[in-house]
Length: 306
Ligand SMILES: NC(=O)c1ccc[n+]([C@@H]2O[C@H](COP(=O)([O-])OP(=O)(O)OC[C@H]3O[C@@H](n4cnc5c(N)ncnc54)[C@H](OP(=O)(O)O)[C@@H]3O)[C@@H](O)[C@H]2O)c1
Image (tube, rainbow, N blue to C red; front, side, top):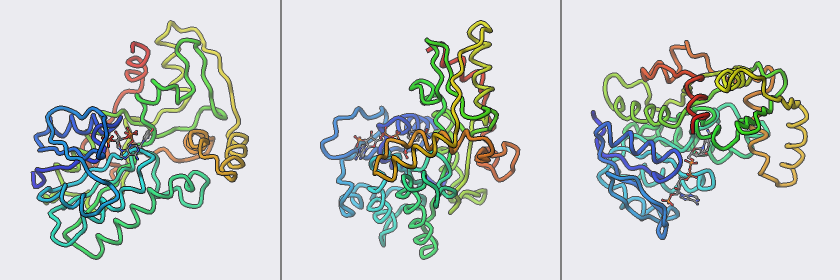
């Protein structure tokens, strides 16, 4: 592996923890960056460095001598990645690969949409990385879009499925395919990118690509849940994407960003949305990285057993 020493910013988080665990398992030396004064628990097997994310100098010192930066900073800290990227690009930096905190829907497709207004800081960072990589051939980045966190989202009721009440909220017909990935699968993708980075086999340099554990429809997820809970039908609460979008846009225009999950649901589930990747596409991250894909029913079963 050309990359050996990896810094993970936000390695204590929901996605950061499985990423750190996977990188340690894959043989990387991992350093986790954490905010000064943070009391979060850091994953085992790592060096922890406390940083001021607003200070390029603090970040430069923390990443000195490292090969790659993976940012998994949480949604509220997305703008704080700009100083981190500036430190990684700075003259004399040893960083060869930067993976920004994307890890959701493909933000290359969201500009101009209502959800794009909320995801603007992510888009801005990838634009910045693209410009900087054009100026400096030693510095490369890779962006990963994984759609919904499937395992994490099911456990938090984000897909409208309630395993206790046996109810489901379904958008439109429920037949639109959507992009979803389990957290350990995303972690494997990050590790695969870093294992290939800077090698002759590297197809991920300065690329933004999609991955997916699977691309089920809402109806397929519901059918799996029904089958696994004895076969009885769950109660369906059907909603109209157009109506949800209208209400969400109205609230967003008044500065209410809490509509993010509604906009995200419409983006993924609305009839005709067309945002699910094709798992057979050779350009899909799954295929570039040799990840294969996963079984949605097994993932639903794991959630029902939790
Ligand atoms: N696709 C999906 O369904 C989905 C769902 C959730 C999140 N995401 C995306 O995945 C990425 C990682 O999200 P996550 O949920 O794993 O992150 P998270 O758990 O919310 O936060 C990760 C870490 O960021 C650090 N941090 C630094 N500055 C912070 C600040 N100002 N506020 C809060 N935390 C701060 C914290 O570590 P220290 O305390 O150690 O500094 C925290 O543990 C983000 O890009 C997010 O948008 C996607």
